[in-house]
Image (cartoon, rainbow, N blue to C red):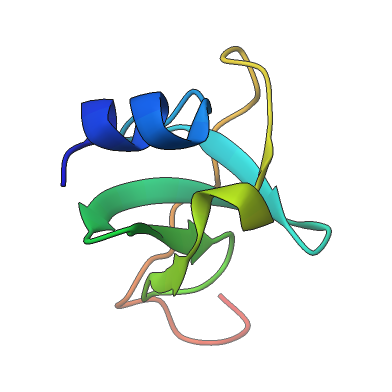
Length: 76
């Protein structure tokens, strides 16, 4: 499936980089896998699969997630 397929099937504004809330936690859509969208929650390194109807879609002008610096040491 593609983002277009997800948009048409679920009537949601699915696109790469879209900002969403998952059970109150903000995240960013990263890709499509079958009927699920992979979402990287803010502060996490990996994305997880969610059904499109599980997500609360934020406006297109919602702020971007802070980037996780994989080389930063805790306390830097």
